[in-house]
Amino acid sequence: MISRKSFEPNQKVWLFISKLKLFLDKLRSRWDGPFVVQQVFPSAAIEILDPQDGHILTINGQRFKRVVTDEIEPGLIESVNLVDPVYCD
Image (cartoon, rainbow, N blue to C red; front, side, top):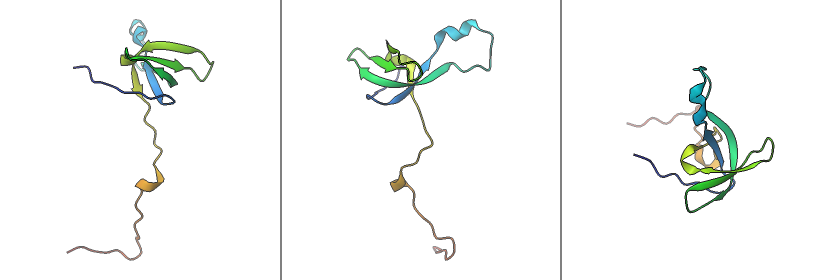
């Protein structure tokens, strides 16, 4: 039931922290980041860059998920004129 994930260089990703189970903080997030993908290896390992301190790490790709942003591409928005609506029969 493991889904295949594909990552590209310069993509932002979240890193899953598995050691957080030892802490009793229920409301603490288990995802850390965002990190920037530097290189993707054929063995599903990913080399990431931490933008805060500049460290480069190589970690298994199953521990990552993509960063979802609220940025909308300009071509995806359709304008609607609310002054003169068109009704369909």
